[in-house]
Length: 97
Image 1 (cartoon, helix red, strand yellow):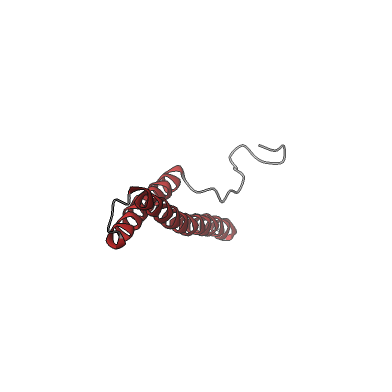
Image 2 (cartoon, rainbow, N blue to C red):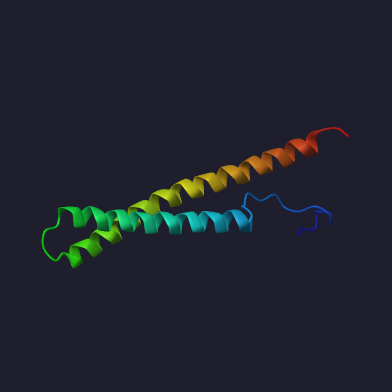
């Protein structure tokens, strides 16, 4: 708290709630698992021999691509939610009572 702030004020923050961050983390993990399964399955479809190494590589690549894509969307969504909340609070404070 800075000296110019009253005790009942809090600094503006676009930081999302812990619940929203936990849900985003869970979505990234779920997408990574699904991407890994898809990558592994895609390699297994085209493989005729024992392809455990290539299947594992497909799983890693699929998991990274899917998890990375969902991570980008999650970060953008959390930022938009934080900005929206900040704008709503500023509008609420600007309204006369």
